[in-house]
Image 1: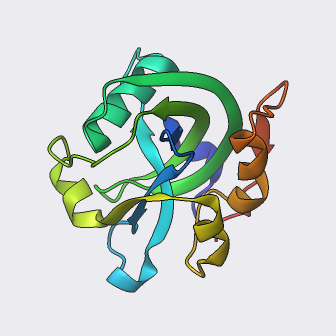
Image 2: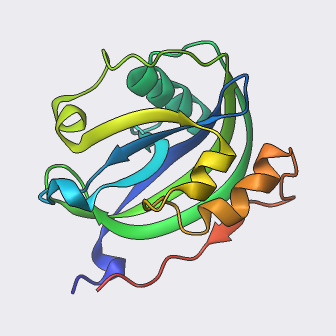
Length: 169
């Protein structure tokens, strides 16, 4: 088992991206070296570049992963930290900051995807909240369905909520 203190920290911008119909965009993918059946849904986003601000990183990730450039960023609502693996296989400590964003929506472009994203992301789609409630598929982060209604209603915490991640074995 890796000691979390020894892992390289990777600041990450995760985006709760909503369209004009209040649907949220989620990606379905799997971790490197995992089979197709191990997929889960998660938000748009990724690691920040050295010296890059959260806002700049969030906008860059949205453009790269969706093609959307007309985006309005909102507040940071959640923080999450947990160990995981990069496409290279390196284990890192992800420090995820979840920011709310809005765009007009529409068809997503995968033109800016890197090879590992093409390989590891199986699907990408807009979800209405009612559809999320009916799915039996895994969605990350933990407590997503519990916390999302407040965000959708514009009820943002005064300070970002820390999402606790169970210890990875």
